[in-house]
Length: 319
Image (cartoon, rainbow, N blue to C red; front, side):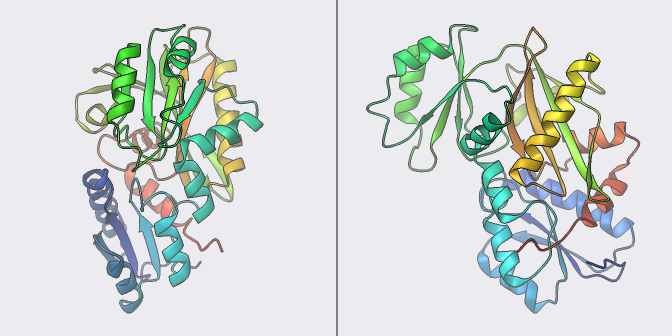
């Protein structure tokens, strides 16, 4: 679409997921950047109900800049409403958003590309009583004496647990809310955490410098992600050329195969043999002061406002 400084832009933020507060921080930053850039008809919208979206049409909004995270903001639901309202938006399509939010489906797609993955089992309300947790524990923990238990479709490491014993796994499996989400029991890969971000430029994907994340907590959980001083960034990450080339290629391949667009992030664990294991895709990465993507863009010589404008110009309808 033709975007000018007169275009009526709504920065959509907030939402109803567990990541609401982070979304508000992302949205505030992006809204401020757009105003600094001269997009004077920028409106900050704190989404709390469906009617807030319907009002966008009544306000003659021409474009939605998405800073929503988690369920109903990043999983295709919001994107579907915007398609129905015929309001172009940043980020990925309905289908790509839904697949990338679903860690299990993302894994199945990555398998078809021969991308290395941590072994995992799906835990559901239906199979909870029949799943052999001891057998799963023995298989997945034999390398590093731990597994991860994580929601199938949530982000920012919300309700994610590092499990260090069979008893703990059995207790957690009984107490998590399987009505809200299925869970993955996933092999713990010991090593370095690497994230790869990319942005869409001239109908191609530019992969930004690789980032190594060193949280001061046991793993990169919600607090470590969004609290200043809780995580050290090594940027660019110190990687052998062959490893970096593989990370770059796999990031482009999975992002393209799922059908993502605009911008995003793919997370990996790099084991002691320098083998990268893909963890997940994030189709609407955070844009807070402590977020990965803005730091990686800065390392590539792209300041925050420039990054926001690059993302803005990818806005479109997909269907």
